[in-house]
Image (cartoon, rainbow over all chains, first blue to last red; front, side, top):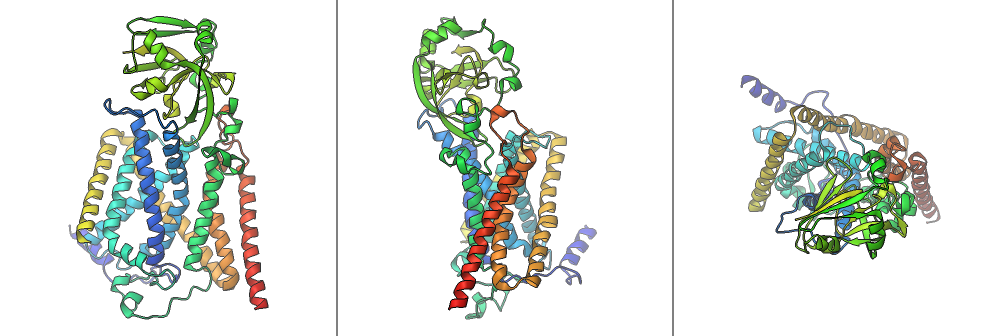
Length: 405
Length: 137
């Protein structure tokens, strides 16, 4: 207890001699508030679209995912990854604009002030880690021991919570910053604007701070240009017409087999021998169980659909599919549109099966052809699920059985 | 405003605590330790290395380049720096995945060089226009 008090006293005492000091007329609460507003919106978009994506993996039985619009998940997840990627440079600009605050003295004025600074630490650390690990996930890069999917969700709660807390704490500064004119607003100084008698807001008509080199507007313009360049050169992986200028795009759909990238190859799934065997059978389990052979597929696969493939990692591309309507298979087994259908892959493991319920049962295909050709082995030959508004990993490939209940 | 501030802060604290609770109950001890190291490391790298480096560059430019030219140089450095942050992980991960995944197949180093050259050319052009205007005016 004594030690705690003395540390607090020291952090609240006279300024150390060699403590850093900044004079940066470009930095201003007016600038930070403008950047922060966009940053808050971006994190909000990421949170909402991210939670929608998590819902895809475990929907409540009374609220199944819709089957239309077919591009819904493509839109929300493309937006999630594009916004998250753009938020990395945006966050860096925002943090740059408030960096001198790290060195404000007294470092800790009270326990309340200590708690506030701790909340800022939580905010910055979760924001940096969330964006970094999210981006690395789109590169299939996992230099950490934890499960990305669940930790990304739990950290999102912490991050969005600390953003709400931060907005609550900073609301007077946000109101002041957004109301102040960018060029003339108070310079960010050691003393918060509200306590500074020399600040514009308190001293009346003070001449605007000179910014001889890059102005505050210049920071916004350059920041927007850099972020815009990142977005335009990376979003081609989901906004497919922009692929030719996708210099910083992770995926290139034109380089995928049959015009569509895959996320797990047949080799990675370890099913090459079984899937390419002539003895392959689809076992349909239900009230009236039956078996389909390769020859049966050729006869039954007459339906066509135009559906996008969307990956949780943010890439997507539209494609033409041919196959057997799932509902047809379900009905022959004694089920109907309200059945719960589990499709099972030759592949073992977490995504070796998935469940189709609700409107998607009537809209999905068991596909044999992609873009006019027989499915490539990497795309799920001989038979795969393709459903509208559904993440790629849940469009199970290399099917071995369908269970209708 | 007071009601707003209290509601936002309360909602934020509750949501944050829920996230911490889910982390503590669903993630293993070793994983949590590494996650804590990441969270602290991220702030240390940003506040202790990246930001001081940016400040140092700004400090150096302020002493070596005159304001009018510095404005365009700073603009270029902001644009170029932000693009570089996104490009570096791509460069490090290039050609690590099976080809049919159609990912990370580009020469991201060359692509970044091209983007930086474009940004530099644009900044130079804007600077030249500015100089020409001032000279003719």
